[in-house]
Image (cartoon, rainbow, N blue to C red):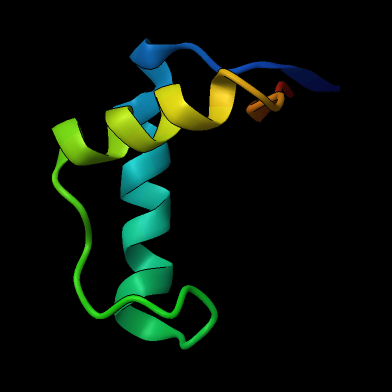
Length: 60
């Protein structure tokens, strides 16, 4: 089963872990360094003021 929900700040650390892989191993983020957790939370908050920020959970 797949669950899609709005992200909450408690999700930030795991989202950042996933994002870190793409920063370090691909060119799709256009970033060279991964943000700190605090910087990432600020980005999330800014985005969430205007747009949905979604997470997908997979349950077996």
